[in-house]
Image 1 (cartoon, rainbow, N blue to C red):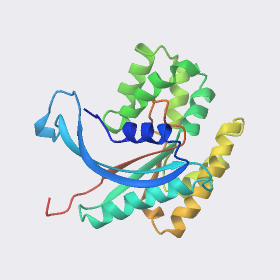
Image 2 (cartoon, one colour):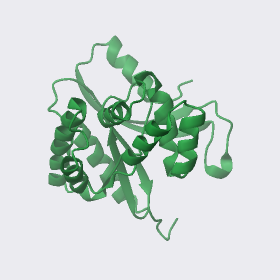
Image 3 (cartoon, one colour):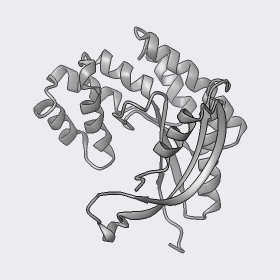
Image 4 (cartoon, one colour):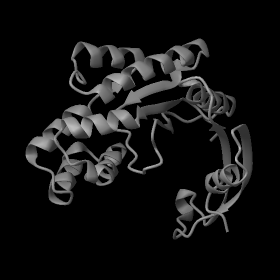
Length: 223
């Protein structure tokens, strides 16, 4: 039984040598998790998926389209105020390198940082030091990075003014990519939904570019 809609779609594209496709899909998927029904988690549930696959797209255009779709869907649902937290894999790679951490610990470090939406920095820092083997200096540097969050253009200006990635070609390249992305999102009138957040981290290898996550900041009275 399929556990998500992405893997079967990726397999289909690979087996049929699909070079360019956009599609959406709604269907049942199954997880082996222990059900937490009081939190709305079940082994069987519906997943809604939309994908842009292939090559020969303009840089950052598919990312802008996907973020635009997310914003349009959430606005149409009337579920209350929301924001789309945004980060980039290249920023994560750069900040881990600048902090002096070993690249082989990328997944382990990101799995800890990603808990910052539920736990405060002191607990995450303790986990990084005691369980992941980071030094005090590494933790302190990472602690400076994860504080960067805010409105997109303001955050990019701050990164440039403070020369945060001055010695990181990867970080500088990513800043230029994000400028392009934000320009597209601004023209689509969805940039106001975006919140730039360095504490949004995913340690999975298939994240190679933009990382995003939608969260409710308030709920409609109907919910």
